[in-house]
Image (cartoon, rainbow, N blue to C red; front, side):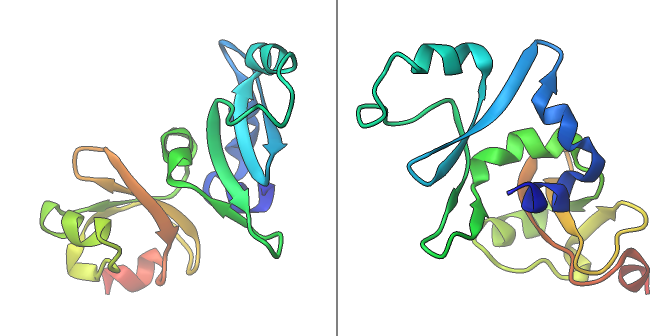
Length: 144
């Protein structure tokens, strides 16, 4: 799981755990990974595991083959800490949200030094995080 998260936020992974408002932790429950404060964790300890449906924020789940998949709910927590971002033009936003690829003409801005196959967070032109993905080309290839 940390490998997937590090793909997007690199060295800022520690910032998710050590928040200024308190310490947060990641817990596995029913093949899902939840992100919660230690205060919520202590309160949830009073509830039996079979009665507990969900905890604070679901970061992702483990598949049957035990591969980790990030959920879209993690986007609000990844976006402020990510190093590499791409901004999409308003015309292309709808197409991206329906699951299509973003082509070069649909990119508004791109951060410097993105390598090929690097994890990026996709933003609208007004800095609203829309999703995350993998860059098929590096920054230098996109500028050509």
